[in-house]
Amino acid sequence: VGFVSEDEYLEIQGITREQSGDYECSASNDVAAPVVRRVRVTVNYPPYISEAKGTGVPVGQKGTLQCEASAVPSAEFQWYKDDKRLIEGKKGVKVENRPFLSKLIFFNVSEHDYGNYTCVASNKLGHTNASLTLFEVRTTALTPGKGPGAVSEVSNGSWRRAGCTWLLPLLILHLLLKF
Image (cartoon, rainbow, N blue to C red; front, side, top):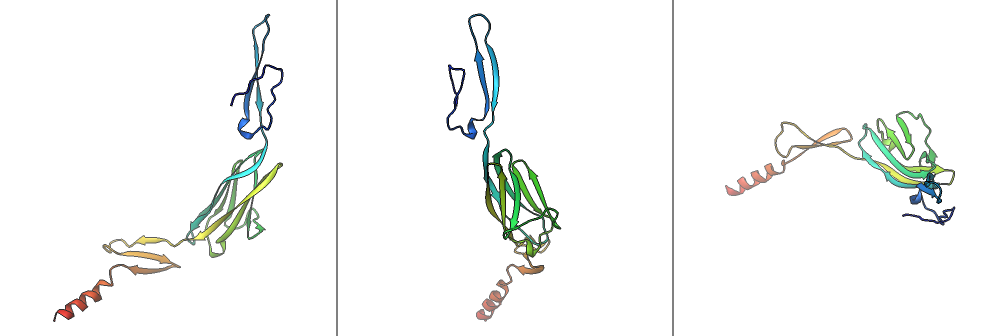
């Protein structure tokens, strides 16, 4: 959006964050060449969370919750689980903060890590929050060299063989009925 003013002032009513940027002022008369100066306009605004990603992770694996917020000045982030603030340095958990992004990283997810988390983004103009969930997923893996239909599932550390084992009783029943 271009703003033009023939006056010595440029008044922007109800300025929004999208109107941040560089503006040019040009002064001229009939005696000399025009003089042009740039003015940078920064619009401060409270944080808003643009993305909050929960995730599913198997026990014993690495997991990450991610919270992205836009704000000027940059947002500061805090993490909570069940209304209790997470303290930096908790064993097995790390918080990585950047100006517009915060990650809560679990290096070895355990059962008690699963649950609801809250990301709070704040600056001097306000704050906002988002809820994220770290939930359990169960891994599936193919058993190598066992042929078609040999899918195995890991569930709480135990292996289950799934496949076409139901076909054998059906074939025996069919053969018995023929005789």
